Image (cartoon, rainbow, N blue to C red; front, side, top):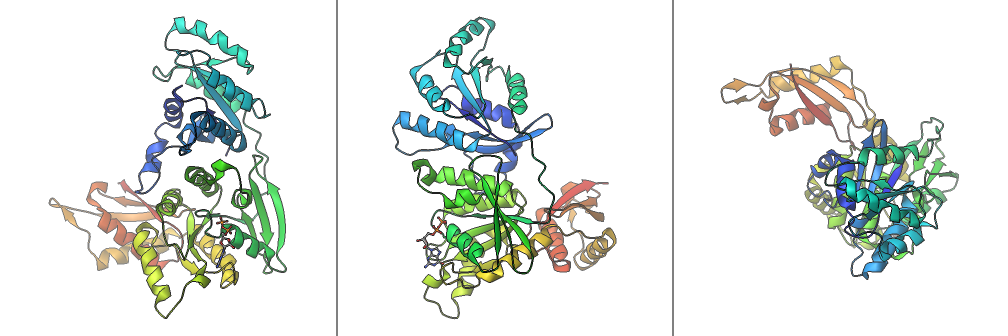
Length: 433
Ligand code: GDP
């Protein structure tokens, strides 16, 4: 998906416009506990165009001086975005900070669209002419409070999207590695790609910084590792900030079907791990939990079970995700990883015939009769699969309100017992009939 960044000095109204553009999609992301509420990054759509939106102002730079923060945010936008919206404010007029931001944006050949916010009434329109001095062409007058002009701005934004090159359709499995810095992601990548008889090629992504790596295993299975560049590069100050790496991870999750959630056996589980895992779960991706640096622990017969229990407690909503204990250093079990990715990808794409599915549902109803709520009995008529990636089932009932979470969970478990959905979320949608 194309990426749009909104940059500008604080208080020009970036977040207001960001929320306006993102619409109610934000609430979807917020449903899962542990998922970021910082709204720095979200999916949005306008007409038929889907895109990702970054509010660089939401990236916390810690104690950096004010001006450095603005500069770094603009640099992130240049790195990450396909289209940059440079926002200024008619209320305060042209400021020195605006000019500083403009200077950084001169360095990119990516499209920069100048939006003048707080044009709340017709008189204010006269103020926008000053901004021609910034050299980004016609400014777009908008008002976050009155919600005017945003449509025109969006029209212009989507017109700047790069033409999507129709990538050749292939069966390669797209996966990404996510996890905090230093858990060993790039070591795993290097170990996987460094295997003898693994054939590797790089594919340039839509933005300069995203590089996908395609490789073929000796068994002939094809994989695309998403955003290898984001994993391998190091250095710039902002790349070490937590929110930046969360943002990068979210984007890799969006672009892949299977997500490897990499944990460090030495350090255990941190909040940031939960953040991104929650996002991957919410996005409906297949998930494998990879515990790396397994070589560093003193182990006895119970270590692996105990660690697994710890993970299960901390990531209760990921009960479907398989766990693999590896070492990038000693290569222990790393050769099992491609096969595991392939399996969960198959489960993620699994289709169940309606007849077979309904046999399972009828058996479930027989073993555990439907509950009665306020004198009204839940009736389940039939179910049908409506989507894959993740497998999504519509269950037709007399009244969706009567099917509580516990019965829904029971049905999901029965479905999981009958079919192999290891590694993938399963979505149930209740419909009245
Ligand atoms: P990334 O930031 O997640 O990509 O982490 P790196 O791959 O750069 O690894 C961070 C550090 O952990 C490096 O010093 C690696 O050598 C080390 N490391 C990575 N994997 C392992 C492992 O399986 N065992 C041990 N002992 N060290 C590891």
